[in-house]
Image 1: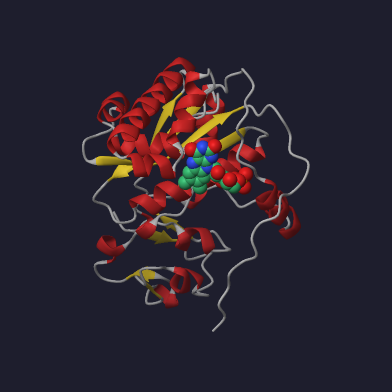
Image 2: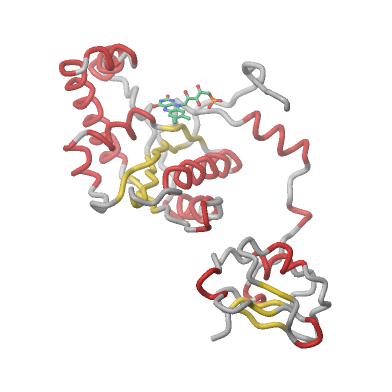
Length: 274
Ligand SMILES: Cc1cc2nc3c(=O)[nH]c(=O)nc-3n(C[C@H](O)[C@H](O)[C@H](O)COP(=O)(O)O)c2cc1C
């Protein structure tokens, strides 16, 4: 099967597909200067879909992404620069949640959006573990506390730097300083050996956090949770990720109890212009 086909009636030979191909595997050497793949293109294509997506005439159809099955970009739905800027600044880490679950369809839908995140070489290495069961989330939070107790004993300096004593004391006092009472936690994991994996998992969760915010739901990175997930044997066993995978990020999710009304200040950007 050819890598892509061209509708010669629609193609205007403008070359946007050639210019935009990250692998540089398209040339205007086909019929009457139409695009065609260079020799060996199949092995070099990263399947990003840019050639199909950039064609204003809908002339190029990738074998893996027929143009007729690919959603058009709806410009009327794109946020303005001002709206986007405000949204990026107004997103907050949510640490108090209502006692109400988020349904599976909604979480699945959010992940469907987050999976459009970029990844090195378009390798899309991210897998998602959704701890939807709130009791299980709480049980795992308890394991994070076990890991902290162990760390306080075995690596007091590290435990001190992260004030683990306070976290453990909070838990023992009936609070949940690990998952902040969020009903769900989502872990992104990927093969440890894949170079783009840590960044891809981080970016995917960042996209998830923004998608969550756009639905008036709340999220917060679960750093303690994820560190325990990478280090603590009982927790690794409980998560049951594939042996060759590592968890590269975890995020709590739920319905926020409070709205935020102001944008907190941030440190000025440290920029070096050259
Ligand atoms: C990698 C990472 C790990 C984090 N881990 C936790 C955590 O375990 N618990 C928590 O309450 N907040 C956690 N946070 C949230 C940060 O504290 C928060 O992003 C920061 O205070 C800025 O607040 P904002 O996100 O509302 O802008 C984490 C953030 C990141 C990026």
